[in-house]
Length: 268
Image (cartoon, rainbow, N blue to C red):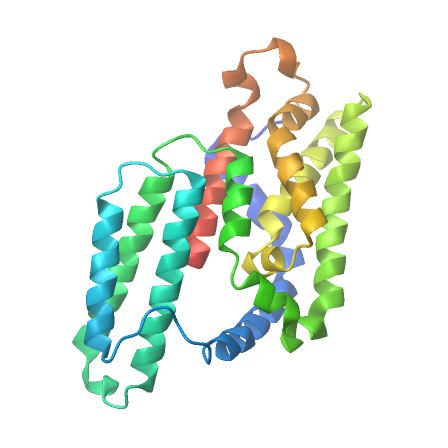
């Protein structure tokens, strides 16, 4: 049975994914921290002499976002990536400043700007309907230092775990899609399991797991995302081609918004 409201969807998905992601979160945190430390030695595109200059630049970037009334996924990705670089530069400068301990007001100001940016970019992202394909495109375009991560020693140490993790959940979703394309009859229990397996890749892949996706896996997930409304309609026993789109795409629309909000919260 399809969940009756958004809260049930969110609660159910969180419970299903909790067991699988506990150890993933630990590994991700360690690896991303090491990757960040490695990347922090690279030259940032923003060059500031003082933390005050950096915070002023953060205010200016926030002002630019506030002036935007709408944005494509590509534009959102560009703004998010620019902010990530600016934020990293600012925080690196603050950490190197030995006098920063007496600048609590400045630090508070920076974090207030960061909170405002997160709210503004989330509102901007939701000014129009976004598909699951849009969400997937945004995740890939904003995944942290993808090329650097693939080449890092930290990634090599956990490569087998991530390629196995990514491969397993993507393959499970692909198997479900193939069965649906073959019009395999599903019981109510099978339909519930298929629904979860189709949704799982978009929930389970965190920022680091997304960063280390292969090009083929990105292509597979992008195609799966585009077909998700039709696939979910099938497991719910609906005729996608001969039903109102408002009805057949209701669940995928709710999921797209949920995943978009969750992803932006995790990276901003």
